[in-house]
Every structure is written in structure tokens, then in C-alpha cells.
Amino acid sequence: MKPTKTKAETRKEIGLQVKEFLARGGKVNGIAPGISGRDINSALPVVFEPQKITRTPVLDEIKALELRKNPVRIKSSNKKEKKPHRALIRDDFNEPLRWVWTDDD
Image (cartoon, rainbow, N blue to C red; front, side, top):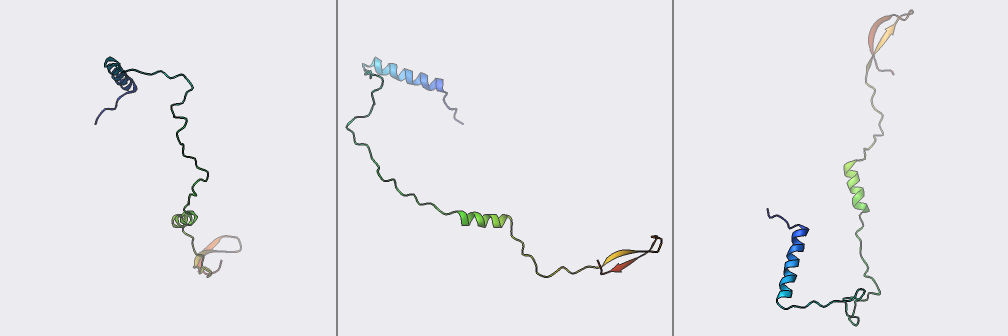
């Protein structure tokens, strides 16, 4: 893996390139602060009407994803069949006598 240059290394490299440029007779023109680097007469693109951006409706897609995550359970109109269960029969003194199977609730 190739190591990346640090900011200090990049600054040093640019500094050396500037020194070499100046040593070969190059000249740097100073520009007063506040002056733009753009030509005043250059044509800038002026947009009066922004382009209409078409958007993809995603509500249907989101609903479909939600249905896949949490499917809707269809409730049966039929009542559940009652299964027989055990019931304890007690005597008059509330003592347990026996267990019986019953369909009642």
C-alpha cells in the first residue's frame, strides 16, 4: 500500500517547486487584496430559469418494503374451534374429586 503524503510534505514540495521556478528566472506578479482573479468582461453563465428536476415517486416503493418487512395478517372470519380442556370437579366442601375433559369454557 502506497503511503499518502502529509500536509507538511506537500507544502515542502510546493515550496521547492516555487524556489526552482524563481531560480530559473521566473517572476511572480503581486495582486492587491480584494481584486478578483476573474476577468470582469468574461461571460458568466446566467440562469434565469432553473431546470426542472424530475423526482422519482418512492412512496409506493416504501409501502411495498414495509409490507415485506411486516406482512399484514389476514384475520379469519371463522371463530376458532374450541378445544377440549381439563376441568377439576370439586365437592360441596371445595375438595378436589376428579379431572374431566370438557368442551365448555
